[in-house]
Length: 375
Image 1 (cartoon, rainbow, N blue to C red):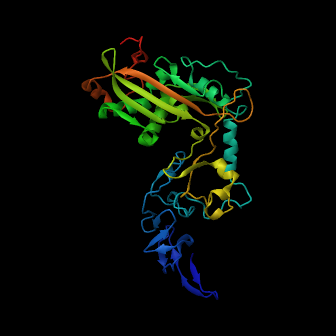
Image 2: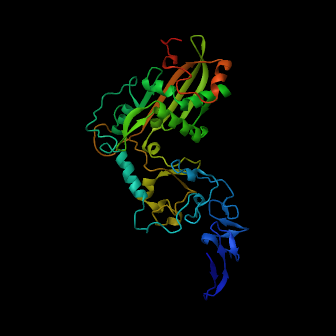
Image 3: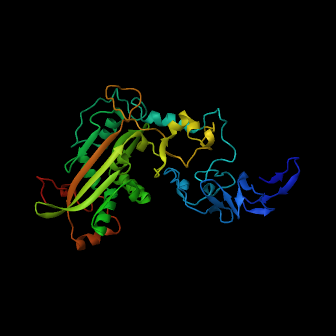
């Protein structure tokens, strides 16, 4: 807002701003930069205050951001550091200064929903279930490609358990993601946690390195890709690593739990305490229910981040139906992976702690223990 007028249209005041909102001439009275309320040199943007003189917010963003958009993960950044192009009226996520679409025109996220649905369809770009019949569930020999087929086509049981001798357990135990947990265990004496307790940067870096070192060819979104077990899992819902005893010897016991659903497979945000999670598809079906003041706009510019959390593109599919070969797929699947490893004395492990070793540096596949195993 550059001018303030009285009821008769006479100019009461005029203000000019630099791109970040710092007044170069005049004083905001009381609304100014981007039409928002000014007070004590700061701009009120609902979720928090913005300081134009610093070019950043004065408090941390309660919205975690989208992992696929690194700029959105910055806790204090304003308008993706590009205030000429973007504004941030919600204080959570930037929106363009000019609305990208009318209330009657579906914006770009509607294409995103349709394309994501295609990826997880039983006759879509990732799988054609009519041409990929159920080969039977084998917890011992299943590969990542088999697991993905069972997930899309909804073959086999919903809840799965993998022990030390399963191929996927052997692969998971050699990943850098598990190396992070193993390292934390030896440094602290025992760990137990959930998604919020693993640094996302470290975990994603570990996933990328795992994909480059050990992976299985699979088709995703119509493209042949090399996927590791950590690519499929995405993250760990919960885990525990603890010291135990096996046949009179010290061991380390691992338990990893994970749920794969359309929410985790199309995730664009993280959960926040006390705020309801919704999907982009739910928003598209009834924008007014999730907008501030029941606004009709469908482009997220009025999305109420204080009450709702946009966590994924698609909502969870709670049913599983292996009798159909067309239509939606990706019914929720859970996994529990457990195994034991020999416990390394402190001195032996210290030499391996930094940096995180290559995937197989800790224990080879036959280093995982079970009742009939050897050590």
